[in-house]
Length: 396
Image 1: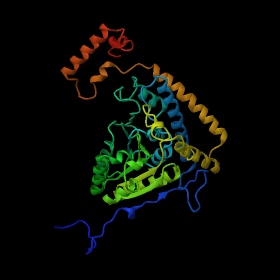
Image 2: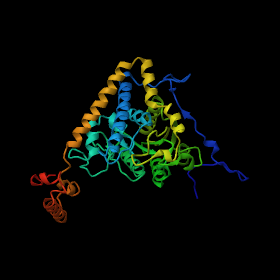
Image 3: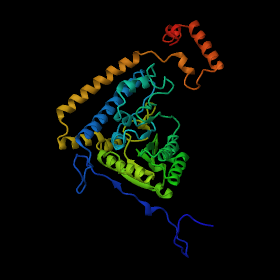
């Protein structure tokens, strides 16, 4: 029998409990916007920094407005990124534009950074006729082939092994691209996580596994999810590069992800990043966090707000001003509200879209079902006020 690695031979039982694998946290930026002593900011550049910050503010405004819309009954469901903007947007900024992103469901900031417009967000959230998914997904399940952002899938952790497989294809393609997949520490408890890391390590796939350790898997605190030192030490079991980073420090996240991308692309090796952050918002619009965490705990993390930390650093660099901040906040709030009103008024997708996009030609059995549905809607126009008028034109 042969083994893949040589190991030291001992003659007395010696057990290890994992304390040897405690991993330090990489951080550059303090909460007051200054660098830690001895720290050096990454080569970010003024325009990239402004683009990152603009996206962070946009997502904060979008989240506030859309949660309010859900509470008003104008939207069925929403999930916020609040508190995790630096982890998501800082990492997305470190990628090349044609790298693939496979997200979980709280990474709208990565999509916005790549240029997904407010109109596009709203069309998906309301599932109207201009939604790329034609209203087939619940809100916040975004996707964009043009921006290399795989459409969100509801089942937890399915995107992680998919990312490993996609990255292996990128390796075979040889075009110098990689895949990043985002997930929470709760998803790291799924079997898909371990299967994906093992596959990526064995086949040397250029994939970045980005874990947003935000403290809670819905209502389950991280201390009840694993006994070891977080998620990062698991990488050692797969002989994988790993780093733990302050997820509220946008400069550290950017630097860590940029280096992870270099390792993945130049050496065809997977990398695990554990970003230590906090979900300031509820898990979703269906959740009430007051049942499992205290206001005092939330207040402590609000003092570590990643958006404010980035703003203070930008001011210190003279890359931003208080006047620009006021203008941006007013502009985005107005734009989000106006765009939402337009999206609400757009009609739903045509009924015929229910049977499209699966087969090259619509099978007879599906066409029969569609015909029956259209006939039903015509018989009961009072029950389908938005659908009935468009049936004569083949739409709804």
